[in-house]
Image (cartoon, rainbow, N blue to C red; front, top):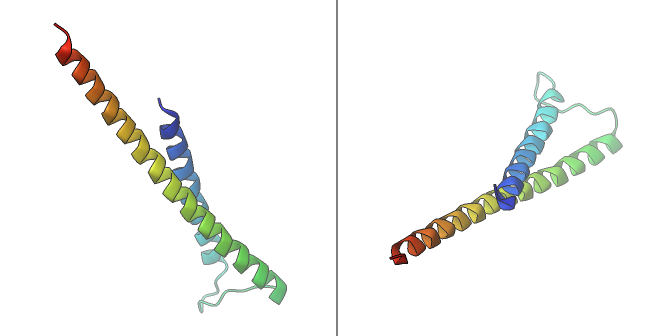
Length: 91
């Protein structure tokens, strides 16, 4: 199993999990009218800023995960092609 496969799966799962966790917290913070409830203005600013930063980190992890998985698939195809070429040239 390749390193890029493992890194791709880990990054993808972490990114999707982080995004799910942030959206779930935001959902449960809403009142029946749809307004978000915070105990103070400072908490509102800190939480919204950290959630925005967390979403950007989640997007980056998802992109890196997809790129690692794509890299793994390209490496695997190249290895299969190389093994086919060596089998053809053997007398």
